[in-house]
Length: 238
Image (cartoon, rainbow, N blue to C red; front, side, top):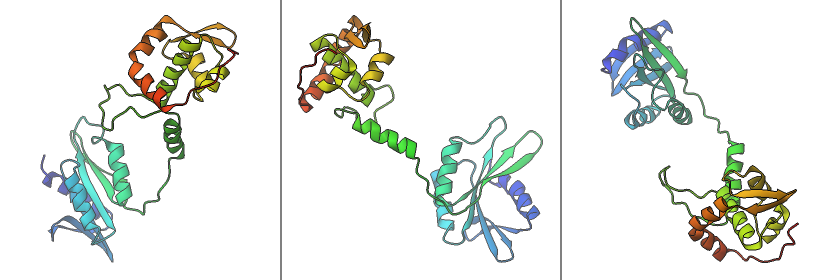
């Protein structure tokens, strides 16, 4: 596909909105005018960083800047559609998709270049803070692949829960917390996501064979956590 194939459908759409259209004007792909309004559309056969650069530069000329890319036959949308839409929204740049079908094309204006209003994702922000606060220590490396072993706050607390049960024998969640267990101790024991724990009586848990084996595999992490902690106190098991 060539960029020129986007010309006709976008030009036709703009003219239906009452604009007069000129192309390749002072490095701008497409310029549309209606009374005092000046609108610029930059075209590319796929979304790219170069297209973003062009759009940002055109914002020096007018607030009404759009980028236009095709959606090829058989495709629902462009790659990473939601991320593209978020990025352009923050840059106050509009997005136009030209959908190519078997016998016709359709122009879809996904977003307009309106003023961006920042909104905080408070729930996600708070979950990040809880994750950080719940960690005993840092073991992950930035940029690690998804297949790498990552040690979340939940896993760290599960390791420490297993450690206390191995060292002290059967305990209640309250007793484990007194020793230094995390705030998810009850959830870790009752949920038993990793299959490490057995409930032997009401409110009392022990470490099973699977848990002991897992703890051996995490010995390096356990040692690092213990070196950063001041563990003390003798629980009564209740």
